[in-house]
Length: 394
Image 1 (cartoon, rainbow, N blue to C red):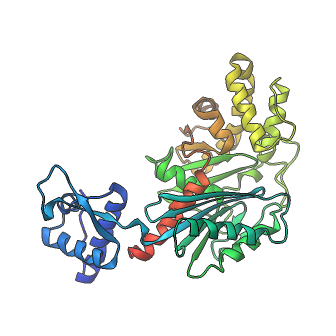
Image 2 (cartoon, one colour):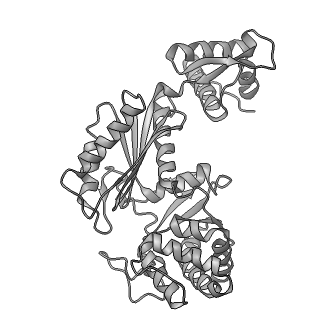
């Protein structure tokens, strides 16, 4: 049972309101009696906060609990999810995926906008117009918050996006266009960090307050959650493990290229090359989809795919060991296209190999947030921002 803290009357009211609103968000419609049982608050306090929240438009009566007799005690109170709306973006070099959702995180609209090469001069404006059409189609007047997941470093001090490679021009232009939306807060975050939040809140690490997500896709990255907090580092570079020097590469990484780093072992092109070396089909394009297909082919091949999976696990374990001996997270989650394709089979192989490389006991899990982990993390991040504003959360 959760109880409210002792405080001044105005602070106590704010704490109690947040407590009730979060319960309604997490558990759905509740009666006043159920709110009293869950919060430990008195009958008059719950009655007062429900009246107050109804006046603000955040809570409404949505029906009655059928098993109870009719009357005030049977009334069901629910969060008014239409009180505010948000959007989430997953920005990649080849285009964007976006979701429009309500305060409860329910999806109201989705869209995919492909972008070829570096994009036409009006690419950013075209993407924002797709967003506007989605918002209008959902009957929404305005967006409260937009959360954007993009590759690169997000400076914690300035919120600006910096590239560790060569980002398309339209990425920066899109952010500028979104920041022109009237009355809308725009939050920018590294896309792997958002995926890490999704695994922490709704995915494979729900029972962990300390873990590392290894994102294995076109390139590699990591999200670091320590004691329940996402860690970004001084310049936003925590998790840039593509630059991690490891044995087995053609050289060393440089300030301008991660080709000699961990990326050179487990980036999608390297995985496709490894698959071909083991006699498995792999598209020479070497993109994330091709690497994912190669891993799935190895799993389906049975014994012929065993040597490839062992070699891939060996490579992944090298990077994981470098993380674990520094951070000792106790748990590593494999995400991205490769982690998703490999599932528990690949995770188990990595865990066994990692146990031979590090004295620190580390569990390796397959990510469960799925291919939409970045978008899911962006929705969660935007929702947190909306609640801080509307619920008065610290």
